[in-house]
Image (cartoon, rainbow, N blue to C red; front, top):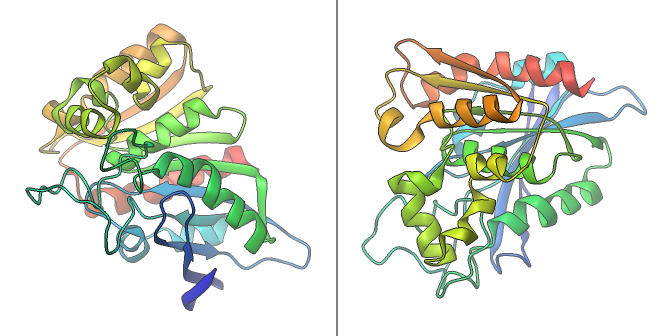
Length: 279
């Protein structure tokens, strides 16, 4: 692991790091905020997965999470959204909703994507193992996960597939049912192929319908989000959770859009909510 940069923030350390990933076959960059800790103290972890077009840098620069994480003694980890670099295939038409910056947190099975686009393995397995090895002050027994848009999809699906790993899951404006919206149909079809049955493990609503469970989740959604009705469809998640007996708190926030102005407004609420469950 290479240290790209570190800076003091709210008594803790905000770092950016890079390493050579075996999952993606590329150099991957991620950020970690570690709060101030007493001798022998270990911090629980909140993972944050970013949305379409983003890198680790969007939330690191605009997420406004450090003060709340410092207050509650929580580490905050933000991976990238896709492999990057020379030789990594991208959408041939240069679209922003597929290819580089749009890994959708799946392991691609279709060519030419299968060689590098293995973000599920990277986020679920490889990066947590690296964090455990390189950051002994972090407590892998206490983890939670959140994310925005495509990253909200990633947070929900990863938590549903790994209910024993995460104490809690939340999301900001998540893509809750990618099998039923254009962004998801394009991504899952491109990465996983035409068999829609293979998509169900990468779809939060489908996972719940198929028996996956978490005790509860928190979702914030702006009602002025331009993607609300066409791509996000939080009502599908609310119904699936109601049918399955999952306690889903869906908060429709009046006047808020899809941007980091929305995310940063409610980030402290989410960190506080996770802190109650991590402690």
